Structure formats: structure tokens, C-alpha cells
Length: 114
Image 1 (cartoon, rainbow, N blue to C red):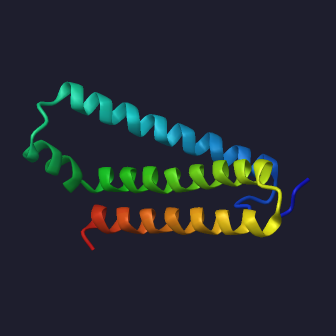
Image 2: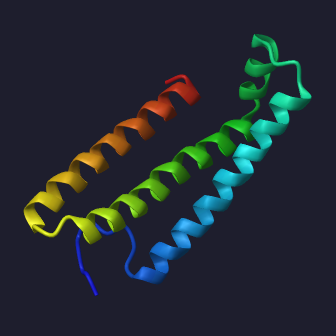
């Protein structure tokens, strides 16, 4: 078993659950967006009207956080499996974590107009 401070979960089962739950959230969000674009004459008015609704902003925030968590667990797994030197792995994971954090914060700023 690999123990690392860069692991999001406490165990492999917890990481597996994060991957599954976030995958469902992302699948639902994707299906909703696909349905919206197919069933609606997408214009600036319809698009901004959708994003003005609080429930949709919360759903989008959930999807954004899910992307971050899903990507983190996946990248942690890949880097742990394929990058053996601990210092190199830590640097790669730190860079990936920083990039994901910046994207999530940036997405929240865009979503909520902060």
C-alpha cells in the first residue's frame, strides 16, 4: 500500500468512491448540457438565462468540483504508478494540484461573477 500526503483519500476504496461519484456527476452534467443544446435554440439569451438560475449554478459548481476531484485522484494514481522517485513525483503532483486549484478558483470566479 502506498501512503502519501498527496493522496486525496484515506484509502483505495475512498479514492474509488470519489472516482465513481464524480463520474456520475460529470455524466449527468454532460447529458443535461447535451440535451439543452439539442432541445433549445441556443442563443446568448437562452444561455445566459440558464446560467442565471441558482440551481444550475450550483449544479455547474458541483460539476466543476467533481472535475477537480476526479482529475486529482486519477493523476495521483498515474503519477504514483509511473513516477518512482519520490521528489520528482511530489513536484509533478504539486504542479498538477496547483493547476487544478487555479482552474477551480477561476471557474468559480467566472460562474459566480466574482
